[in-house]
Amino acid sequence: MKYLSLLLITIATSAFGQEIVTDLNGFRLGQYRDVPKNELKTILQQNTFEDGFEYEIYPVEKDTSVYMIFEYANYDLQTIWSIQLTGIKKGFDCSFKGLKLGMSEKEIEVNIGKPSLIEDAGEYGKKWVYNNTNFTLEISPNGTLGGIKIIDMSHNFFPNPDLTKIPPFNQYTGIFKSNNRKEISELLAPGIEIYKNDSVYFFKNSLAKEIETDQSKIFKLVDEISDKLEKINPKDTLQYEENMRLSLGQDTKHVAKFKLNNIYSEIVFKYMFGRYVIWEIKIN
Image (cartoon, rainbow, N blue to C red; front, side, top):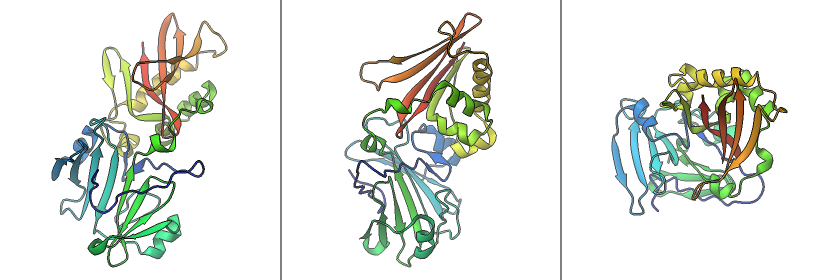
């Protein structure tokens, strides 16, 4: 498979010390394909690779001094598989480990350490590879940061669900009650869907914008489900139960069902990025 620019990721996986970074410039791996279009508006270029993977390029700055490339895997063309930020605007905050475009190599090392491997990228400069991570950096010929790319390598790093990471009732309800949208967002799948009154809600903008504005009303609905859960005794089997959901061709999911005033609602967890996150919420 071909990759755009010079950020072909070559990660040496091991059983220890793996790090999955999910966010770049406010966008999160696994968000719906429409999200970049909703926020960045203009597609500069789009195409399909021979293997069926697709990409779209959007300007972040009107003069295209900064742009982003989103790739979509052939097995799921509706969600973001990789995110790349590239540009020449010095000082542009990438919202990624404190890095800014135009930083010197020494400044980069102070923020995230030395790379595991440096590859020659010819006229484009160098590619910095960090083992056991899902990101690479593009270093321009003048020795400054020119780009960052992250790829969803979660299935490579975490091929099998770890049931010990299913968040217990007190943990996820405590996060709900924190009113900390950033913390709550880490508990939610990027493509979460919430069902209520025959309507479906999901993140329509970058995670950064949703955390700031809640334009899609996801956090408002989380508050609503949190209020219901406060009235539930998780030790009462007539009120609360947990089980596994098995579906042909899909990953096994963990389901928490609760009943209030004889009305059932449920929260569905899915294993992503090496942890269990909330995939669906049904509010009845």
